[in-house]
Length: 357
Image 1 (cartoon, helix red, strand yellow):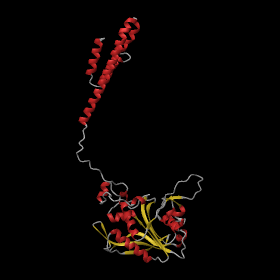
Image 2 (cartoon, helix red, strand yellow; image 1 turned 135 degrees about the vertical axis):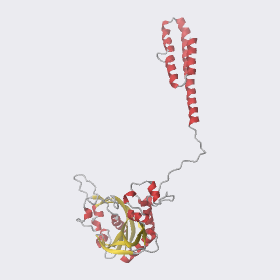
Image 3 (cartoon, rainbow, N blue to C red; image 1 turned 180 degrees about the horizontal axis):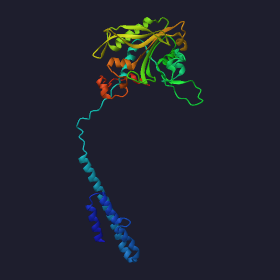
Image 4 (cartoon, rainbow, N blue to C red; image 1 turned 30 degrees about the vertical axis):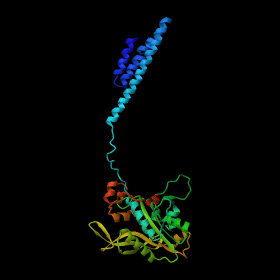
């Protein structure tokens, strides 16, 4: 018995890892271990022999188990000490550089536009991006045969068979927000409506999803002269120039009458746009006086009130101001692209959080 004890205690003390220790445990006190087998022989002994051998074997079993547990704890402590030596951390070293996020050009330009029109007394209005056919077309005096209502130009929402609800579309402009604002606030009113819009188009200057801001001002004595002044002040503030010349060209939009495309005098030098000088003209937006039928659709009496409306692509004016050549780059570029055009991390609280839905 003493020889068995000395053998296993020596092996346990010499075990190099937990795997070796487990092998010793199985050999000593496992179901087929040497000590376990000797305990099975107790049944063949006389009463007197069992009274001597039984306590001795139990004591040996307990001693071996205790030695195994102590060695296992010692191995764990040694492993932890080794990890602490090899995985140390110098807390006095400077932290790793954290990459900074950047405000996106679309977000920044939306905030710039919002701030400029806020100074002119315009509030911000929002509406759903999935609109009914009525708000997106009918209320804006867009007839049923108009090309914009074709599926090749507009994204229509799928409907189950038997669904007789009015057609719904991904809004093609933010003009439906103007109708909703007129219904809700009445006249007089002065709002801008920034947001995402959708059309079935994709090339260097068009994407299926883009951003617009539309403006609406209605009162009893508003004229085209007010529209021209408003747009001049906006262009001067946005492009940061002291003077600018606008040119109104007659056009046609179903929701305004008269309607005008708006050009700005500019020059191109070395591929850079300079606003307010030169002999070139650049179209930037569409505008006009709100059509009487649109006023009626918004619940406003056209015999008492009149107003102007305009719409400009946020993506387009962002490209012009910051020299971004391809509209598609807004959606598939990384921080290196943003830094190239001077968009650093936004340290100040952002107004855009309320405009991004």
